[in-house]
Image 1 (spheres, rainbow, N blue to C red):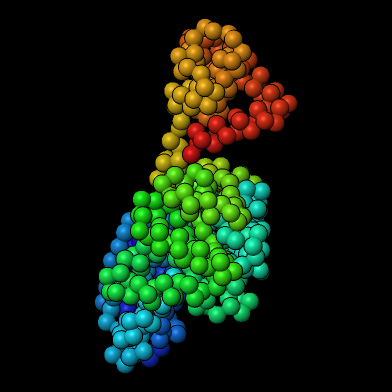
Image 2 (cartoon, rainbow, N blue to C red):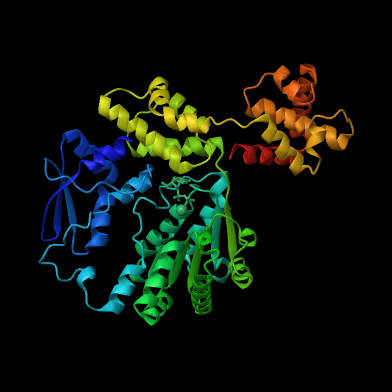
Length: 452
Ligand code: ADP
Ligand code: MG
């Protein structure tokens, strides 16, 4: 919450030639915003007014800027809300894209979203769950258009680094000398709006020409195109034209091509033709590495106990993990107090509460029964056949692991069984996990599904 109210205090002092000056009321705020959002603010200004070269952030008071829109409290969302308010562009800047009369040029210029300079390969922390996707992205950045990796299809849950990797590919390509105009990155949503706008303004030819002129096209969150048949069709043609010309395509989605039901079959088939890389849910180790890297980058002294605590509590989404850490650091700066476990619990109260949403035993029974294809009634029945007894044991084990219920309470929920039965189930499952890796994977998968 702090971020929003602080950023809201930012005001525009003026624009002078290629320099914008914005004001914040205190030195602390100035430093904080500058170090956390300086680059992003500059980038956003440049995006709105390409003539801008520098954004100067100073201490001072001015008229209040427009309140940021949206309720997104994540760092990314906030940064977005920092976009320069539609203040009138300086009168002496006729070269701005907005005032350009060349419609074709405008289509082309607006085609690509700017790359976030923070999302580099260097700042991406690699661990088991993402090493394959990372390696594929690197390969594409080093050798775009290579058949084996074309298209590169990245998929995985929210906040696991898909967008980060795509930006990293773009940044690396430009670092290696590719002209920025030849690398196009945009969300599928933006793709659709651009397409619709092009149709409306009768610029579809320019739109198509421009898309087909790039060397690398990256479309983020492709699942957005499900049900948007015309846009899908357009994307499909662009896709084919580019791949046939040996150009590189990178696509991300929340599911694998085969699971993206609702996408046209021929598109799904083609998407799966290159390299498909999955970003798995983070592990505790990866979360710790990410937190350590981010704390070091922010030059903040965060005790390892606190990092451990965060990595344990916030398990699904790296964006949230990062947001929580930032919040702690900002809080420590603001009150000039060290980060401790107590302050972490206090400051992150709301986030932690949301994550503490504990799975219920009913839910566990339902999921496990589904998974093993058995009747839910057999979770509480007296049947002892292996086919029902084993899944029941797994469910008991998961109930112990994922809820705060006691053994007797769990026993009661499983057809009034004794707490020693639950205890036995837990140790039996543990033995099997150690002995049988496919069983272990199964249980792990169930656990992940229940936790997400
Ligand atoms: P997605 O697009 O998969 O939803 P993002 O790429 O937007 O996720 O990642 C969310 C946030 O988490 C970003 O700020 C990103 O930098 C960060 N992040 C995700 N994975 C990593 C990682 N392995 N190392 C460093 N930062 C990461
Ligand atoms: Mg994303």
